Length: 212
Image 1: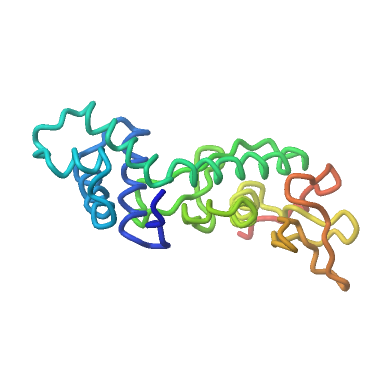
Image 2: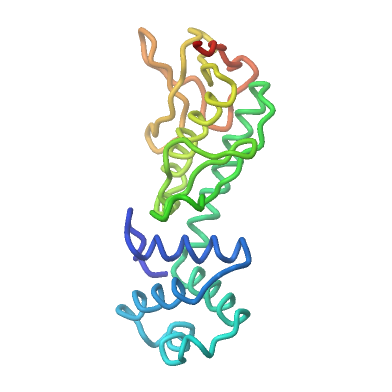
């Protein structure tokens, strides 16, 4: 696995384009060649990189481009980073549902964002803070960043504060405390309300109202 994914890097942007192209079934050769060139600066001898760099791009069939794209994502560990983020989405989705909110969440790379970062999707839309795929290197960090993004899109969806502290009825925020991803309350005495993934029904939202 090559550590080439840095926030805002070209490698991350090309990998995201490959992932999105594979998902949508319209992967072009350009991001595959570009990512292979970046990997080739570190190691030009691995089979998929060598094949991409030695063959004219025009000779590659769509099936070969797709397979080589998948090979590059595996080679660089992008698929593992993404899997960690997707797992985090499902963990936080459990907290959302435990609060009585019926929302289906997913992780997506929107067409309108070419930076290479991911967004949390909620009920057909997406938004919230962006999440860099590199966050998937650490499961705790990934869980906190995903929880922060989920909180944003869920509150936009319900027009209310979520989640709330069972004791103080104040809004909670995601934090990493001694290596554990938790929901923290910033009340008079800041405290941990629950580990992320362990919220119960008492965290139901407080609703606000749209202003006219």
